[in-house]
Length: 252
Image (cartoon, rainbow, N blue to C red; front, top):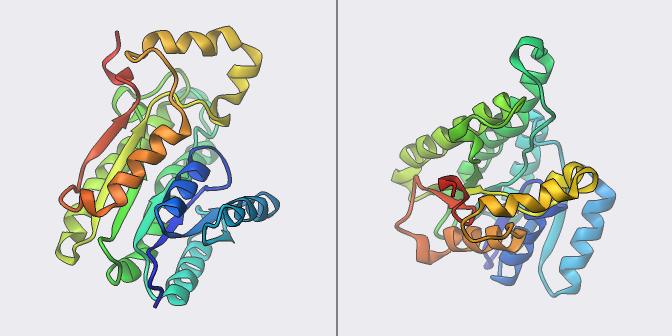
């Protein structure tokens, strides 16, 4: 069994996920980065190793039940435990109004944001039971409360479900000392907003006006909170969702 703590971060080849992996690596974890672009994954693994972080890339699609189960079992068996699972993978998946929404689109967005959390958490639980201060950290969104903007209704629905699943996992796993919490990032300056940033930079910049702290978030802002939730300092925190949005959820 690994003497170091072991963390799996899904969707960790860019954006918030990579910053989370880097932060946990700096915290002393062996970090397993998941993604679906193997070239990018190898590059990110090399970047972390160059910084002295014990990192490994593991490529699989988080919406594929068999691949998730197979790969997380492989990681768990290799290290003898999992201490932290960060279900970072997810996304908008596009926009569609309900009247014209295809069942395929609906299922794709739900799979990306909800099925992925279920598949990875279920597979990791036997190894989390062997971990030190073990926890699952999920991602929800303001859209889980306000149902999202035009065409983002299913994204909002999937994130509301992640909020509830986080609390349900916390109830289910408390007897094993496994905690489950979530972060709810506000507007974070990542490729998630790449399209609007490149086509309407003035609109993107104006978003800061709706944030109480007057700026957009950075991936490091989320990584710091994930680091805390994974740590011993948060050992009495479970079933919580922490807003990381500069007060954006309250509006101004």
